[in-house]
Picture 1 (cartoon, rainbow, N blue to C red):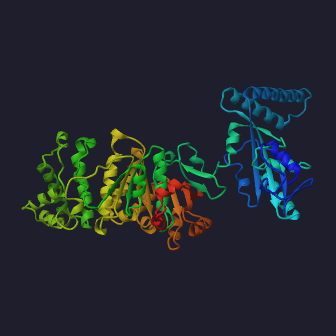
Picture 2 (cartoon, rainbow, N blue to C red):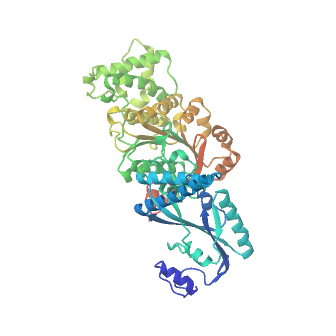
Length: 586
């Protein structure tokens, strides 16, 4: 390394010597007028001397995503308020003097001077109100190539790209060494070609700023990951959208549950209460990590009584439980009830409550609620109605038979806390739809509790299980339609896009989701997904080959590609990779 380079680095406080081991870098530097030879490569530095009048979020993104090797250095030096005010005052005086001289000589006004004077006056007013600050900003570009001829072509491409952004990039002739050092991560600006920018313009130049999702910048969003283009961070606030629901569609193994768990964890950071319907017991580690409530439905000793009354429902609590019975029982039996059976069920439910001493008087709601055993007993005691006795016989497996474990007693664990996980993995297949419905019902009762109103997130993983049953699909549809009124967002996660998009209720759930996340898709489902979400040919090709955890975040006409991003601690809490879980070290 040459002594000149060492001297420049020492100015920045970097310890280096002339030996190859003193600092990681090229073994030699050959300095030319318009380029440098760095070891076996070449480099040329450009300084940005002209800027557009206005910039938007992500205005540096095209430079950061340039396909060639391009080092972008942004040097920022805050200007004290007193100095900034004095400089603006003198600048305004010069501009106003030029305008008056032009007018006195009856010449045509210079539009550039007029615009500059207006901008200076506006900036001075904002600084005086404390709405921003002034910074001296230097922007330098180091272009690298393998040969001198390739370097010339690459410099031309970069300058053309800058011109398309209304940036004037000029080679730093005879100052290439100083320019190259200015682009190194040592914080040293040897060129001093700075331009004054205010706070808003500088914030828009932040490398993680992105213009792909203009509705995302609310300051209270959740980090989903890193954008596929430019590496910008994708933060999205679902509670700032027209509705708070979202759908996550992906094939098996594409990372949909991983992303849902990551969003749940980061929503907890923001104080959002989260409830999860977990069919595969994938959220247990997350619940234990954050101290949440984990209800493993179907496990020994775990029961949920669907007839528990919620005092928060007021005088309508009894009616609501009776109506819910008309949803739950058909799901248990696997078919809709005829009118005679529905009438008998209604009488049996009310008789069971009356037998427990509970009437329409809210003062009786504190008494122990009846269970499914009492309802079946009330139906069996109705000797005048054959439909009632037939219904009681059909309920026998759930009150005295092999499926009684979930219903044969009062609720064992109250669903409460900042994270509630209802696991369905221990339930037999015949009870999974009913268990999902019980979980959704418990969550809905918490969501509609006006006495504890707060932001809530409900995640229904593998939603095809409940969508396969008409009564369960209708219940989920009501949750999707009404969740927003209660400051709640619903997340529907499924790998079976055909089942979701192939029914009217499923399409209604998708239509009521302002946030739509598509991860890798199976070739058999890409046409249905592409038509439903109006995907372009390029987006379809991307989803067919997307890596695990990568996909498209869409909201209306706005969309961006992203890859899920997690810290090591977060990854340990949300991963479900069998290889990692089986590792005794991990």
